[in-house]
Length: 501
Image 1 (spheres, rainbow, N blue to C red):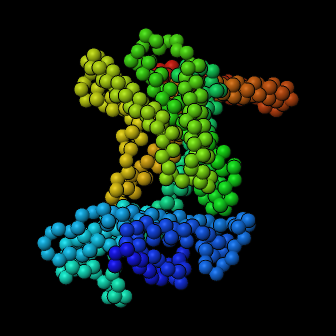
Image 2 (spheres, rainbow, N blue to C red):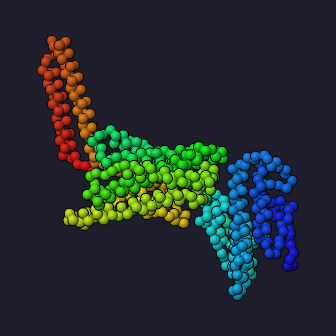
Image 3 (cartoon, rainbow, N blue to C red):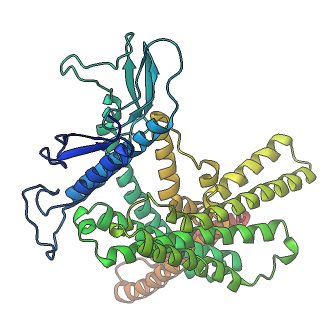
């Protein structure tokens, strides 16, 4: 009746006291029930995890909540929040006004269901309450011909089909491990190849120029970013005990990881600005002030990384700052996306200029477009444009897996691709390595000839009566001539084929 309270025992959920009562005032039922249940839910115990009626607790004592308890508390909080929103929606929505039988709107314990016509299925995405639930899959619920929700034959209770939510859990766990080790291997290979490239750039002074200087800084940012990524993956992501202890060191590591991630992409932007200036605005290509590039590449990323760290500490201070369920990440990701969009503009403009120049040289049309495509493919791994071209993950499971593999290769092996394209396949680098190899062979041949001469003098002085002189003289002369002929032929081959990219 109006103006009265109704009550019954609390449900036998793990977080509730079944001996307690739920009160139902007519005008504030849903809010009151939600408040009482949430209060019970958020009271945690050191061992059992949730407050029980007969348990006495010292309010001054500090309890150590295990990660499992914390995770379960978060899950139940999400469920109760969803329940509250569902009840609000059911109160707010208009009554069902279509003809024919129908199933009443309801809350099934995890999801909210609207009024549904009899004899039909209704579906919605799986909830994100649990780590092993796939929110891209569907939950279905059947309203039978009599206007009643389907009841499971074994329990005779209304039933929603959540089986698809965990149908591919094992496959996804296996894929997660594959992607994890792909990231480790990719960054390790990137570090090795980039360090070799940096050694080549620093060793050969003939390669010193502004463009190579930018390459050095870009490669250094790749090395540092890969190093911090590997350390973060091994020591934090794959170590629940560290996440549980939540030391300040893991947050400092996260800060440097975010900073180096920004440096990585802003040095890509520096490369894009330089290439655009070199090809499109050629009048300024000879002398550029590199200190502006240093400020943009190493200095500017410190601003969003610092803002993110301060905001994260104040507004979303989760363990080791691992959660991605916060909009504060846009403080770092926003400038990165802006840099990538600017690089996309540079890439399109560079390709336009290249196509125009190729057209002016009256090349064959097929050759013209082939060179334009090749230039584009070379610039893509350097400038990071693939993250703009493919920014959204498909919802389909198979397409999503393919997307994950492609993006992990492009992300974690990008350093290896850049080192290969802009160092190992670079004509100037290959020419410098060939000249160094020829110089080494010449010095080695000279030392052999000197050693041969010293040996022949000593041998002739001690054994002239035993060995005919003409035998050694012809052998050493032929060795000298053969070495000279080989060296000259290699030098000629180097001169005829010494073209630089």
